[in-house]
Image 1 (cartoon, helix red, strand yellow):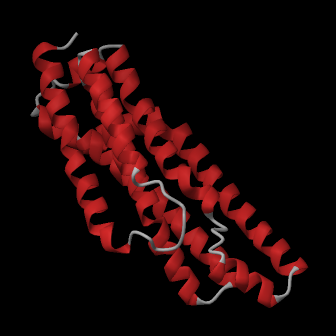
Image 2: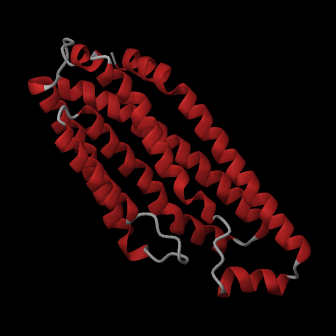
Image 3: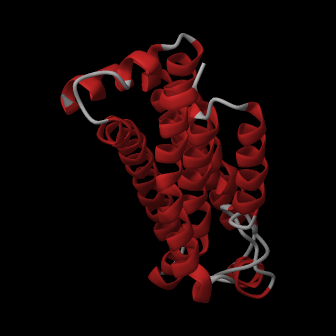
Amino acid sequence: MFLSLSYKEWLKTRWIILIAAVVGIVSALTIFLNLGAISEFNDANAVWNYVIFKKYLFYGDFIYIPVLIGLALGISQFYPEVNSLRLKLTLHLPLKENRLLFYMIGYGTIIILALELFFAILLAIVTAHFYPSEIVVSEIKTILPWLFSGFVAYFFVAAAMVDPQWVRRTVLVVFGYAITSYYLFADGYENYNHSLQWFLLIAVLEFSLIFLSGFRFKRGGR
């Protein structure tokens, strides 16, 4: 059953996944070219001054990629189901509704995780070409909240799409936007090291939002 549902989800999301992968590669390539140009036209002291003392986030353009992927994946995955009432039929399959929703949201979570791991590895490789391992580690710690934001956006948009009432949808969207915005700061290195566990915990807790929306959809939906 999981393989069949995964294939169905793949058919809906394959172009989003492909576009996201291309965007990540282009972003990493752009960072590589920018760092190459900076290294070419500036001496070592100037380069280190920008990175260490002025806290130049040479990977700052990456900040919105995870959250955009979460939004796009959630919409592409759940909008067709809700708009054409296919979700109503899906939830009446001979399988518990929570398990079906778990499979669907689990598929999206795995895809986002795979894409973000791919992006993080690309960024680490690019950074390691120009800087020592300390900078690479600092980079990973800095982008972790950005990576978490992709999951947060995905869980909120999925719950909002499935919920049958526009009032609750609006509330979910507003809260989702407010919470996600806290993940998207780019004003220095490792500013949220002491809060990473809370960012992660919030993201994990929001995984359950879809089940409440699914319960309401099946009982009192369209």
